[in-house]
Structure formats: C-alpha cells, structure tokens
Length: 338
Picture 1 (cartoon, rainbow, N blue to C red):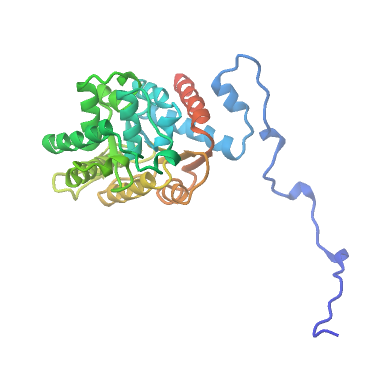
Picture 2 (cartoon, helix red, strand yellow):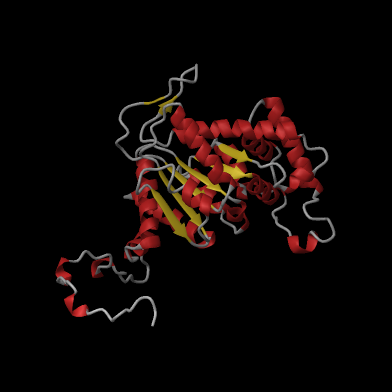
C-alpha cells in the first residue's frame, strides 16, 4: 500500500449558484449581423462579431477617425512586406486625403519603394541568388543609396527626406506608385531607420557608413518630435530642450501610431521615441497604437500595444496586409465622412 490513500471526492457537497448571477463573456447581442449586396465598408465592419480581432479593428478605425477630427496625427510605421504586396496605392491615397500625416520606414521598405519607383519591379528570389553570391548585388540600387547618403549629409537632412527629394527631382519613371515620392510631393515627413548590416545596400563598397548612420539618426530625432505630437494636444520643446510641454489638458482624442509589418526594428525605434518624448514633457496618455501583421510577435506586442500606452489604447489585428489595409482605408474614409 502506498504512503497516501486517496478516495473519490463526494461532489454532492459542491456549492452552486444560478446561471443568472454569472458574468458572461459571450452574448447573442454581440454575434455577427448579416449584410446585403452593396453594403458599405462600415456596414460590413459593424456586422462583424464584437469580439477579438473584429473588435480591435473597429476600435482602431474609430481611433483614427477621432484623431483626425481632433487634428492629431496618424503615423504609419511599415515594414517592406507592405510595399511588396502592392499596398503602396492605399498608403499614398491616405496621405493625399490627409488621413496619414507621417511615415516611418525601415531600410528594406525604402529599398523596395525606390526600386518600384525607378524600375516598376522589386524583390528577388533569395534562395536562388544567395547560392552564387549575387543576392543584393544590384548596381543601380547601391548607387542610388550611396548618392542619397551624400546628399543627406550635404543638405543636412534625414535619409527619408533625401530619398523623397531625389525621387521627385529625378522624376522617377514610376513615382506615382512610390510612397516616398508621394511624401516628397505632399510634404509628408518620412523617416528611415536602418540597422547596419541588415540591408542589401550596406554591401556596397562606396557607401559611407558615417553618412548613412548620421542621416538615419537625424530621422530618429525627427521621429521623436512626431511621436511627441501623439497626445491629444500639440507638444512643443523649448530652445534649451528641457521645457517640453503639452498645451492644454490631454482629455480629447489622441494621435495614432500604426505599426504595419515590422516585427523588430520599428517597434524598438518607437519605444525609444516614446521615452524621449515623455522625458521632454509630452503627455501621451491619449495616444492609441495598433499592430497589423500576419502573426503576433514579442516586440510588437510589448513595444507597440502594451508598454507605451494606457490600458485599452493598444490594439492587435492579425491578418494579411493585402486584405486588412484596403478594408481599413475604406472604413476610415467612411468614418470620417460621418
């Protein structure tokens, strides 16, 4: 016989209560509604079940509409996949409509946008080209970014502005499809944040690493100011850099930060920019953030939708960019028209 002797529990002595007294997470009133042919985007979204992803999607559409009505900025930080799956026209249109007021790119996003602007095509089959050492060894792209770094240093501007200016000045053949060219044309700030060694153009022998880094660091400092504006009121920093303040009370709708398709670099950049802005006095309690991606990642979850924002102000929407972004754009347009 073992050390312990166990007997079946007598469950007749359990304490129970009426289901009418229980709190419930699922309710028939939150179930999906049916739509008819010709329904609007907002009708479709309103018909979705009021749970999880659909609830988050609805919340972020409302937050973007509220931000623009309160004259607060909406910023999109995007990875290269957004450009590679053909979503540039959506971003450009939202910039033209004044829905998107600033952009943040990683290095790969800028590369693919530039190649589409200049060639109309981009992206190679890495599994093939990595085997013979030809991966990333494209003369034109390397030369473009080497020149951009020189111009950024000469004109004392960040990489984003230098790239956008060059695309517009050179009248790139497909500039109408370039987010960066559109930003240059519209005067929308765009920042480019590079991690040395992560982009194909870093393999170029004539790329000045110092000027590349200086241009990207200047963009980071610009982004800190942009992020500082994501409270519900304007934010200014005094000449000495120590008397930042948000004008008025932060009780209205705040600005919105949308992280779309960047799993590591831009979430890390955003976290540091938030710290700088708050250190200099920005009140970001009303800021709203969202992450759109095909899967959940640690840094996007922590650095975008949890750590920087107040509870309930961060939203996660999982799905393909080529499906989510067209729906998102149309829904915001309709929400702003109300």
